[in-house]
Length: 117
Image (cartoon, rainbow, N blue to C red; front, top):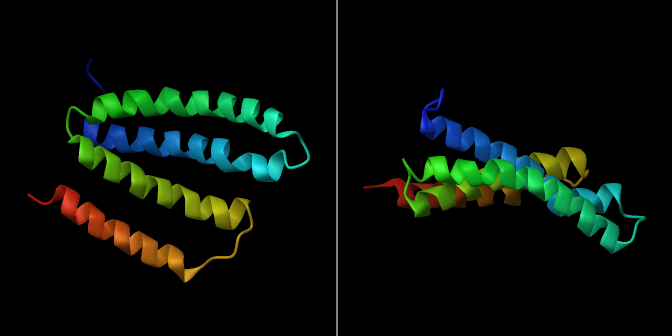
């Protein structure tokens, strides 16, 4: 299948979308459904997770044509942290911690090792 965007870029964009849904599925219920039963949160999260998978599965299939599996995984981890920190700070009203920066720097080291030749 021919894609309009470069598969390197398309993979990353689709994984960012996937991660936005994933983060809300995993943690959004803590704010939005705190007064509801956990089973309500489970079903709401499953619905959101379906949207996540609609982006994640094709992203990984496209990405696997240009990235190795370990590279895909480390890209996913970097995106996860890049989505989670703003979500935690701005949406969940958690205080910013310098530990977020240190964790991001550690991930940059992991990126280096996964992508070096």
